Length: 379
Image (cartoon, rainbow, N blue to C red; front, side, top):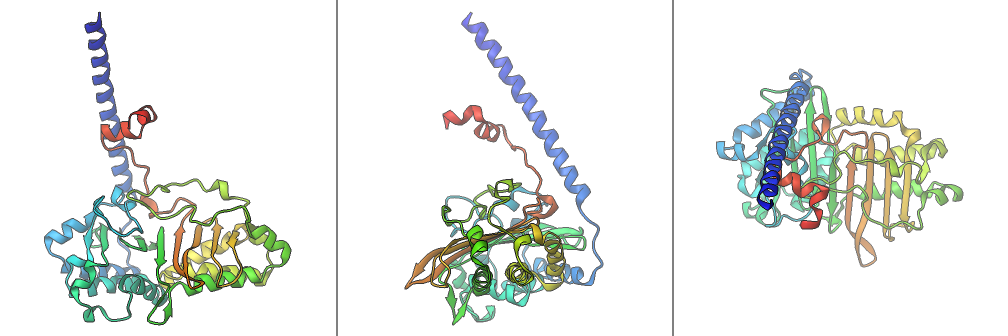
């Protein structure tokens, strides 16, 4: 009898494995087909042509081995496998490290950053990654061994109208995607510690513009804005080894804080200036398009503050607009002033990672069981 039961259980297990395998194959094919259909035609817009041309120059500078290591198809899970933490040996970062590149190759990659980002945005990235205003050519190549950052490339600008890249490492996560005539830069994490390099305050506008907005509010507005029972810390923060906030539900944050429809014109302009300090890290032409979408929902934007009200206080704030989510958190202090800041910019309308943020099914049977509720008690 026991042998019969075991035989039946074995057959059931085989059937489940076969059914699941077919499900994974079918789901994977659907996702791949969806990605293929959504790849845009190559844009002839001059600014997009410049982006593609600059990226091609960087790609062409790489050896075949480096280009292979750096390249992933659009929609690949590597898109979501970024982190703002210092790289460790606990997981494969993916892509190619700055330390693997020559000074000439690094210089070409920085040219890519320059055409995607505004001057202000590029300065922030340079200060975060280099901790110096020195040109790349004046930096010792071994410098990057102690400050590792990683580049992952998605799609191919030579053959597709949809392509992008990711740059991540300590205090940095950039996800840039070109899709036809459109350019997106979400999610983006910028952090810094310390906050001053070469006499320049990194993320200064992000803090000062928020204080200007807060101080322009009257007592009743501040009462709605300042959350006395909240804890500081990013609520929808950076990715981990795999981004836990992919396709996140932001509905719990609706109605919390001061709504922009309750602000006067001057206060709304202060709010817009704060949002711009994040949006205009992107090159102006593309940031203008993004800002237009943000302005359409400006009255439905919520502003939340936790902490004191001066530049010497520990603070947290967020801006929740229908198309942009912004958080700022003072992570640490020294001598009464902030010396460790984290920020995040995401897209609450489902546009994180652009149109290629597809719901990914488990790739293996083991992954399926490790994620399933029925297996939680056996980990």
